[in-house]
Length: 340
Image 1: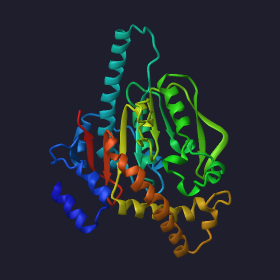
Image 2: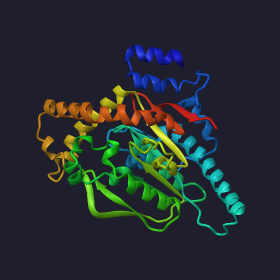
Image 3: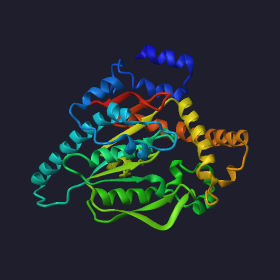
Image 4: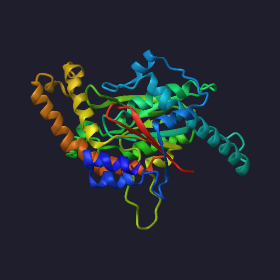
Protein backbone atom coordinates (compact mmCIF):
# COMPACT_ATOMS: atom_id res chain seq x y z
CA UNK A 1 0.00 0.00 0.00
CA UNK A 2 2.78 2.44 0.92
CA UNK A 3 4.67 1.66 -2.29
CA UNK A 4 1.46 2.19 -4.23
CA UNK A 5 1.01 5.64 -2.66
CA UNK A 6 4.62 6.62 -3.31
CA UNK A 7 4.27 5.64 -6.97
CA UNK A 8 1.08 7.70 -7.23
CA UNK A 9 2.80 10.70 -5.69
CA UNK A 10 5.66 10.38 -8.14
CA UNK A 11 3.16 10.73 -10.98
CA UNK A 12 1.04 13.45 -9.39
CA UNK A 13 2.47 15.24 -6.31
CA UNK A 14 -0.05 15.85 -3.55
CA UNK A 15 -0.56 18.93 -1.46
CA UNK A 16 0.93 18.81 2.04
CA UNK A 17 -2.53 18.54 3.59
CA UNK A 18 -3.56 15.71 1.26
CA UNK A 19 -0.35 13.82 2.01
CA UNK A 20 -0.88 14.24 5.76
CA UNK A 21 -4.44 12.98 5.48
CA UNK A 22 -3.45 9.99 3.36
CA UNK A 23 -0.90 8.91 6.00
CA UNK A 24 -3.83 8.23 8.31
CA UNK A 25 -5.43 5.91 5.77
CA UNK A 26 -2.45 3.64 5.10
CA UNK A 27 -3.28 0.22 6.49
CA UNK A 28 0.37 -0.56 7.23
CA UNK A 29 0.60 2.40 9.59
CA UNK A 30 0.67 0.98 13.09
CA UNK A 31 -1.68 3.56 14.55
CA UNK A 32 -4.12 3.96 11.67
CA UNK A 33 -7.74 4.11 12.91
CA UNK A 34 -8.89 2.45 9.67
CA UNK A 35 -9.00 -0.96 8.07
CA UNK A 36 -8.17 -0.58 4.36
CA UNK A 37 -9.73 -2.82 1.70
CA UNK A 38 -9.41 -2.97 -2.04
CA UNK A 39 -12.75 -2.67 -3.81
CA UNK A 40 -12.46 -6.31 -4.84
CA UNK A 41 -11.92 -7.46 -1.26
CA UNK A 42 -14.70 -5.16 -0.05
CA UNK A 43 -17.11 -6.69 -2.60
CA UNK A 44 -16.75 -10.08 -0.91
CA UNK A 45 -18.45 -8.76 2.22
CA UNK A 46 -21.82 -8.49 0.45
CA UNK A 47 -22.48 -12.14 1.38
CA UNK A 48 -26.06 -12.91 0.33
CA UNK A 49 -27.25 -9.29 0.15
CA UNK A 50 -29.62 -9.23 -2.82
CA UNK A 51 -29.16 -6.86 -5.76
CA UNK A 52 -32.50 -5.07 -5.84
CA UNK A 53 -31.70 -2.36 -8.40
CA UNK A 54 -31.79 -2.60 -12.18
CA UNK A 55 -29.42 -0.96 -14.66
CA UNK A 56 -32.16 1.45 -15.74
CA UNK A 57 -32.72 2.50 -12.12
CA UNK A 58 -29.02 3.10 -11.57
CA UNK A 59 -28.88 5.26 -14.70
CA UNK A 60 -31.80 7.28 -13.35
CA UNK A 61 -30.16 7.72 -9.95
CA UNK A 62 -26.68 8.75 -11.04
CA UNK A 63 -25.65 12.35 -11.53
CA UNK A 64 -24.42 14.00 -14.72
CA UNK A 65 -20.99 12.71 -15.77
CA UNK A 66 -21.06 9.98 -13.10
CA UNK A 67 -20.54 6.59 -14.81
CA UNK A 68 -21.58 4.46 -11.81
CA UNK A 69 -23.29 1.33 -13.14
CA UNK A 70 -24.93 -1.83 -11.85
CA UNK A 71 -21.59 -3.59 -11.51
CA UNK A 72 -20.32 -0.80 -9.26
CA UNK A 73 -23.45 -1.18 -7.12
CA UNK A 74 -22.76 -4.90 -6.86
CA UNK A 75 -19.05 -4.36 -6.16
CA UNK A 76 -19.27 -1.59 -3.56
CA UNK A 77 -22.74 -0.60 -2.44
CA UNK A 78 -24.18 -4.00 -1.57
CA UNK A 79 -21.47 -4.58 1.05
CA UNK A 80 -22.08 -1.05 2.34
CA UNK A 81 -25.81 -1.76 2.54
CA UNK A 82 -25.10 -4.91 4.55
CA UNK A 83 -22.76 -3.01 6.89
CA UNK A 84 -25.31 -0.27 7.45
CA UNK A 85 -27.98 -2.87 8.17
CA UNK A 86 -25.79 -4.24 10.95
CA UNK A 87 -25.28 -0.74 12.37
CA UNK A 88 -28.99 0.07 12.28
CA UNK A 89 -29.85 -3.18 14.06
CA UNK A 90 -27.21 -2.50 16.71
CA UNK A 91 -28.45 1.04 17.32
CA UNK A 92 -32.05 -0.17 17.58
CA UNK A 93 -31.01 -2.79 20.13
CA UNK A 94 -29.14 -0.14 22.11
CA UNK A 95 -32.19 2.13 21.96
CA UNK A 96 -34.41 -0.60 23.40
CA UNK A 97 -31.86 -1.30 26.13
CA UNK A 98 -31.77 2.37 27.04
CA UNK A 99 -35.56 2.42 27.22
CA UNK A 100 -35.37 -0.36 29.79
CA UNK A 101 -32.46 1.28 31.62
CA UNK A 102 -34.17 4.67 31.91
CA UNK A 103 -37.68 3.19 32.17
CA UNK A 104 -38.86 5.48 29.37
CA UNK A 105 -41.71 3.22 28.26
CA UNK A 106 -42.91 3.91 24.71
CA UNK A 107 -40.46 6.69 23.92
CA UNK A 108 -40.22 7.67 20.25
CA UNK A 109 -37.54 5.75 18.36
CA UNK A 110 -34.77 8.01 17.08
CA UNK A 111 -34.07 7.76 13.33
CA UNK A 112 -30.68 6.46 12.16
CA UNK A 113 -28.86 9.36 10.47
CA UNK A 114 -26.17 8.83 7.82
CA UNK A 115 -23.96 11.78 6.85
CA UNK A 116 -22.30 11.87 3.43
CA UNK A 117 -19.48 14.38 2.80
CA UNK A 118 -16.94 15.12 0.08
CA UNK A 119 -15.96 17.65 -2.58
CA UNK A 120 -18.12 19.01 -5.36
CA UNK A 121 -18.22 16.75 -8.44
CA UNK A 122 -16.98 13.70 -6.51
CA UNK A 123 -20.26 11.76 -6.65
CA UNK A 124 -21.95 12.42 -3.29
CA UNK A 125 -25.42 12.80 -4.79
CA UNK A 126 -25.18 9.54 -6.72
CA UNK A 127 -23.96 7.69 -3.63
CA UNK A 128 -26.77 9.16 -1.53
CA UNK A 129 -29.51 8.27 -4.02
CA UNK A 130 -28.21 4.74 -4.66
CA UNK A 131 -27.94 4.10 -0.93
CA UNK A 132 -31.44 5.45 -0.34
CA UNK A 133 -32.90 3.02 -2.87
CA UNK A 134 -30.93 0.05 -1.54
CA UNK A 135 -31.87 0.76 2.07
CA UNK A 136 -35.55 1.23 1.23
CA UNK A 137 -35.56 -2.28 -0.24
CA UNK A 138 -34.38 -4.08 2.87
CA UNK A 139 -36.81 -6.84 3.97
CA UNK A 140 -38.04 -4.58 6.78
CA UNK A 141 -38.96 -1.87 4.20
CA UNK A 142 -37.70 1.05 6.28
CA UNK A 143 -38.73 4.60 5.47
CA UNK A 144 -35.59 6.29 4.13
CA UNK A 145 -35.47 10.03 3.41
CA UNK A 146 -32.72 12.07 1.78
CA UNK A 147 -31.94 15.73 2.45
CA UNK A 148 -29.04 17.81 1.13
CA UNK A 149 -27.47 20.81 2.80
CA UNK A 150 -28.04 23.02 -0.28
CA UNK A 151 -31.33 24.27 1.10
CA UNK A 152 -29.57 25.46 4.25
CA UNK A 153 -27.36 27.86 2.33
CA UNK A 154 -28.19 31.49 2.97
CA UNK A 155 -30.23 32.96 0.09
CA UNK A 156 -28.17 34.70 -2.56
CA UNK A 157 -29.48 38.08 -1.44
CA UNK A 158 -28.08 37.46 2.04
CA UNK A 159 -24.80 36.15 0.64
CA UNK A 160 -24.44 39.29 -1.49
CA UNK A 161 -25.18 41.46 1.52
CA UNK A 162 -22.51 39.62 3.50
CA UNK A 163 -20.11 39.67 0.50
CA UNK A 164 -20.05 35.86 0.51
CA UNK A 165 -21.17 34.96 -3.02
CA UNK A 166 -17.58 33.99 -3.88
CA UNK A 167 -17.53 31.74 -0.81
CA UNK A 168 -20.80 29.96 -1.47
CA UNK A 169 -20.37 26.42 -0.18
CA UNK A 170 -17.83 27.47 2.45
CA UNK A 171 -18.91 26.84 6.07
CA UNK A 172 -19.84 30.48 6.69
CA UNK A 173 -22.34 30.44 3.78
CA UNK A 174 -24.65 28.01 5.61
CA UNK A 175 -27.28 28.72 8.24
CA UNK A 176 -25.75 26.27 10.71
CA UNK A 177 -28.37 27.08 13.33
CA UNK A 178 -31.12 26.00 10.93
CA UNK A 179 -29.24 22.76 10.18
CA UNK A 180 -28.86 21.98 13.87
CA UNK A 181 -32.54 22.70 14.56
CA UNK A 182 -33.55 20.45 11.68
CA UNK A 183 -31.36 17.53 12.75
CA UNK A 184 -32.33 17.97 16.38
CA UNK A 185 -36.01 17.70 15.43
CA UNK A 186 -35.33 14.61 13.33
CA UNK A 187 -33.32 12.93 16.09
CA UNK A 188 -36.04 13.73 18.62
CA UNK A 189 -38.56 11.89 16.46
CA UNK A 190 -40.68 14.99 15.84
CA UNK A 191 -43.28 14.78 13.07
CA UNK A 192 -43.17 16.92 9.92
CA UNK A 193 -39.77 18.56 10.29
CA UNK A 194 -39.15 20.99 7.42
CA UNK A 195 -36.01 21.59 5.39
CA UNK A 196 -35.70 24.47 2.90
CA UNK A 197 -35.75 23.61 -0.81
CA UNK A 198 -32.99 24.65 -3.19
CA UNK A 199 -32.99 25.11 -6.96
CA UNK A 200 -29.85 24.21 -8.89
CA UNK A 201 -31.44 25.96 -11.87
CA UNK A 202 -31.69 29.36 -10.19
CA UNK A 203 -28.74 28.58 -7.89
CA UNK A 204 -30.70 29.80 -4.90
CA UNK A 205 -32.90 28.79 -1.99
CA UNK A 206 -36.58 28.73 -3.01
CA UNK A 207 -38.40 31.23 -0.80
CA UNK A 208 -41.23 29.72 1.19
CA UNK A 209 -40.68 26.20 -0.21
CA UNK A 210 -39.82 23.26 2.03
CA UNK A 211 -39.49 19.49 2.00
CA UNK A 212 -41.23 17.85 4.95
CA UNK A 213 -39.59 14.90 6.68
CA UNK A 214 -41.97 12.87 8.83
CA UNK A 215 -40.26 10.46 11.24
CA UNK A 216 -38.12 8.36 8.88
CA UNK A 217 -36.43 5.18 10.03
CA UNK A 218 -33.26 6.36 8.25
CA UNK A 219 -32.24 9.84 7.12
CA UNK A 220 -29.37 10.42 4.67
CA UNK A 221 -27.96 13.93 5.09
CA UNK A 222 -25.61 14.88 2.25
CA UNK A 223 -23.37 17.90 1.82
CA UNK A 224 -19.79 18.99 1.27
CA UNK A 225 -19.19 20.26 4.81
CA UNK A 226 -21.38 18.03 7.01
CA UNK A 227 -18.32 16.79 8.94
CA UNK A 228 -17.11 20.33 9.60
CA UNK A 229 -16.11 21.30 13.16
CA UNK A 230 -15.98 24.69 14.80
CA UNK A 231 -13.65 26.37 17.26
CA UNK A 232 -14.19 25.09 20.77
CA UNK A 233 -14.93 27.66 23.49
CA UNK A 234 -12.32 28.10 26.20
CA UNK A 235 -14.95 27.86 28.94
CA UNK A 236 -16.03 24.35 27.92
CA UNK A 237 -19.54 25.42 26.92
CA UNK A 238 -21.31 22.82 24.77
CA UNK A 239 -20.92 23.56 21.05
CA UNK A 240 -22.89 21.14 18.87
CA UNK A 241 -21.51 20.03 15.51
CA UNK A 242 -23.71 18.86 12.65
CA UNK A 243 -21.96 15.48 12.80
CA UNK A 244 -22.99 15.04 16.44
CA UNK A 245 -26.36 13.88 15.13
CA UNK A 246 -24.89 11.24 12.80
CA UNK A 247 -24.95 7.53 13.58
CA UNK A 248 -22.66 6.79 10.63
CA UNK A 249 -20.68 9.02 8.30
CA UNK A 250 -19.25 8.49 4.81
CA UNK A 251 -16.65 10.56 2.96
CA UNK A 252 -16.41 10.28 -0.84
CA UNK A 253 -12.76 10.77 -1.73
CA UNK A 254 -10.63 11.10 -4.87
CA UNK A 255 -7.26 12.62 -5.85
CA UNK A 256 -7.43 16.37 -6.23
CA UNK A 257 -6.46 16.29 -9.90
CA UNK A 258 -9.30 13.89 -10.68
CA UNK A 259 -11.91 16.01 -8.91
CA UNK A 260 -10.59 19.00 -10.85
CA UNK A 261 -11.11 17.19 -14.14
CA UNK A 262 -14.57 15.93 -13.16
CA UNK A 263 -15.63 19.45 -12.14
CA UNK A 264 -14.52 21.03 -15.42
CA UNK A 265 -16.03 18.21 -17.50
CA UNK A 266 -19.34 18.57 -15.65
CA UNK A 267 -19.35 22.34 -16.13
CA UNK A 268 -18.83 21.90 -19.86
CA UNK A 269 -21.65 19.33 -20.04
CA UNK A 270 -23.97 21.64 -18.11
CA UNK A 271 -23.09 24.44 -20.54
CA UNK A 272 -24.67 22.30 -23.26
CA UNK A 273 -27.69 21.25 -21.19
CA UNK A 274 -28.99 22.98 -18.04
CA UNK A 275 -27.23 26.29 -18.73
CA UNK A 276 -29.24 26.62 -21.97
CA UNK A 277 -32.36 27.33 -19.93
CA UNK A 278 -32.88 31.14 -19.82
CA UNK A 279 -33.88 30.82 -16.16
CA UNK A 280 -30.56 29.23 -15.25
CA UNK A 281 -28.27 31.29 -13.04
CA UNK A 282 -25.42 30.23 -15.34
CA UNK A 283 -27.25 30.91 -18.62
CA UNK A 284 -24.75 33.62 -19.50
CA UNK A 285 -22.08 30.95 -19.91
CA UNK A 286 -24.07 28.96 -22.47
CA UNK A 287 -23.25 31.33 -25.32
CA UNK A 288 -19.52 31.48 -24.65
CA UNK A 289 -17.06 29.74 -26.91
CA UNK A 290 -15.74 26.44 -25.63
CA UNK A 291 -12.30 27.88 -24.69
CA UNK A 292 -13.92 30.84 -22.90
CA UNK A 293 -16.34 28.59 -21.00
CA UNK A 294 -13.52 26.26 -20.00
CA UNK A 295 -11.52 29.24 -18.74
CA UNK A 296 -14.49 30.21 -16.55
CA UNK A 297 -14.74 26.66 -15.21
CA UNK A 298 -11.01 26.64 -14.40
CA UNK A 299 -11.33 29.97 -12.62
CA UNK A 300 -14.31 28.81 -10.54
CA UNK A 301 -12.44 25.66 -9.62
CA UNK A 302 -9.24 27.46 -8.66
CA UNK A 303 -10.73 30.42 -6.77
CA UNK A 304 -13.68 28.73 -5.02
CA UNK A 305 -13.95 24.96 -5.13
CA UNK A 306 -10.26 24.07 -4.79
CA UNK A 307 -9.87 26.50 -1.89
CA UNK A 308 -12.91 25.04 -0.16
CA UNK A 309 -11.62 21.51 -0.70
CA UNK A 310 -8.20 22.26 0.77
CA UNK A 311 -9.31 24.55 3.60
CA UNK A 312 -12.53 22.94 4.77
CA UNK A 313 -13.60 19.68 3.12
CA UNK A 314 -10.49 17.49 2.94
CA UNK A 315 -9.47 18.19 6.57
CA UNK A 316 -12.75 16.58 7.70
CA UNK A 317 -12.02 13.27 5.96
CA UNK A 318 -10.44 11.56 9.01
CA UNK A 319 -13.66 12.18 10.94
CA UNK A 320 -15.65 9.79 8.70
CA UNK A 321 -16.57 6.26 9.70
CA UNK A 322 -16.07 5.05 6.15
CA UNK A 323 -14.14 6.50 3.20
CA UNK A 324 -14.79 5.52 -0.41
CA UNK A 325 -11.68 6.31 -2.43
CA UNK A 326 -12.32 6.71 -6.17
CA UNK A 327 -9.97 6.31 -9.11
CA UNK A 328 -9.71 8.12 -12.43
CA UNK A 329 -12.73 6.30 -13.88
CA UNK A 330 -14.97 7.48 -11.01
CA UNK A 331 -15.14 3.93 -9.64
CA UNK A 332 -14.22 3.08 -6.04
CA UNK A 333 -10.74 1.58 -5.71
CA UNK A 334 -10.33 1.46 -1.93
CA UNK A 335 -12.57 1.45 1.12
CA UNK A 336 -11.37 2.60 4.53
CA UNK A 337 -13.53 1.52 7.46
CA UNK A 338 -12.95 2.92 10.92
CA UNK A 339 -11.95 0.32 13.47
CA UNK A 340 -14.29 -0.35 16.38
